[in-house]
Image 1 (cartoon, rainbow, N blue to C red):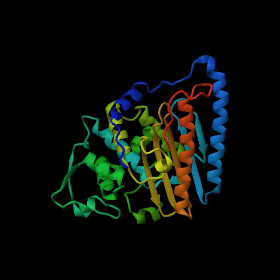
Image 2: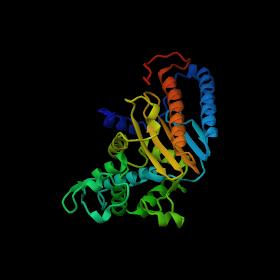
Image 3: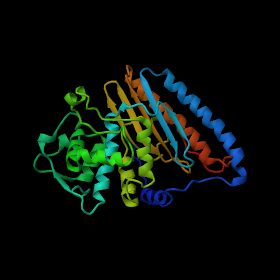
Image 4: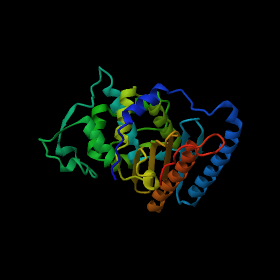
Length: 318
């Protein structure tokens, strides 16, 4: 089901203008709140640990509470192949360059369809008319996010520059998040040039974007808008249909990942889940979905409640 978020631009401006703020309950309620929330947080940790333990292969998780900065991390610093989740970094660099007056890559720059650019898993680009159809870089970005179109992705990599993407990641102090090859380059992967990240680093990148440390407020708003376009993915599987989820999944043989910002009312959070050495890929997808569901239930009840646990606001409908 399509999701439409008319207030998204306003939301991004608000989060950027309050980038360093922490929304706290009144001081007198703080001790009781912390004790009770710690108990809930421990239950969430136990649930996610159980899901992770029962999945075959290796799994890493990073969850960040964007209100108080609390983090839940399992194998958060392990380096994983991230498949198409690396496209978050490509998207960020496109927006970063587009907001600079001296940049050579703008969202509005036009691209004319070239059949030579086609690779496997290019559902939209393969349907365009070579030499005739013209689209913007922003259109290519939407193709890249919504259906993970690999031809559109590779065109954007050429336009913004692979080295520039990695330099942006370095400037965010992300040492293990790297774009080393274009999409569907098996020879490069066999040679060890894999696109990688860690659960913690991808969560950090998303948090830095959310807090306008990578892009200005206007670019942040549109970045989140594009990343929130409906798509087949694992994080939203058991979440309310009207909940805004700005995410990008990834899949390769033996690999599943999904990373995003979940805009729970009054308690947004970031989730980054990566898996590898997976024998049962459907089970890995289900594990990511169940971890996201468990996290959502925690943030939903906390966001709707007072420091004493009384529910004061409507909860999201599952």
